[in-house]
Amino acid sequence: MNALFSEIKQSRYSPGLVMGAHVHSRASLSLVLSGSYEECIRGRRGEFESGALLICPAGETHAQRFGAAGVRKLVLTPTPEAIARLDEAVRFADAPAVRTQSLADLGRRIAHELHTADDFSALVVSGLSHELIGLAAREQAHRGGALPAKLCRALELLREQSHQLLSLDDIARAVGCDAGELARSFRTHLGQTPGEAHRRLRVERAAALLVQSEQPLADIAALCGFSDQPHMTRAFKAQFGVTPAAYRRSVRG
Image (cartoon, rainbow, N blue to C red; front, side, top):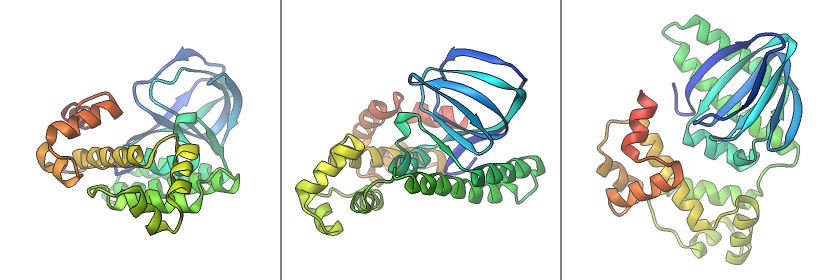
């Protein structure tokens, strides 16, 4: 649908509905617009109502019990770009939930545009999608969950220069810190080395280009800094579990 969400749909759930343990093949974000429900994920059980944004990584087992009034929510399928941006504040892989009423208001605006579906709705939804990611990250930052500023600057540099080979010293010099300090920050907050993070961002840029353009795979590999198409394919499959060609077909299909 746009650069941040490949699909956005509004779903309704009947009062008292129980959904046993199940998984989804794709990651999802669920934004509660009305009603409330209980979800169990990662051994955690919580009650969620209007304004809650629940993050569910691909393949994550979860179960739900819906309240007496039923539930209406938006279910959003994030693109690699959205996951990367949320990761900088929300730790996507931890399946967290972010709660703020401003997200419910924003979700209702998105739902209204989905219903309107005129010539301008796609553009409006695209803007609202970026606002949603920003609000979620801001709320997490207010709760003390944001990444350190120097680490955020390092990630932004890697994202902007994903096609270039940067050394740890280059990155540390650019963000104004010691190389050892920066390496520890990557490991502590992301569980990755700077090189692993750089590879992840290259793959995420490739994934975005696969969806947004008609360029051949070899051209995308070159644009994203891979030595050749097989190099990109190996890295892509290691991160997403499918080849670039299969990913392009599945998202567009």
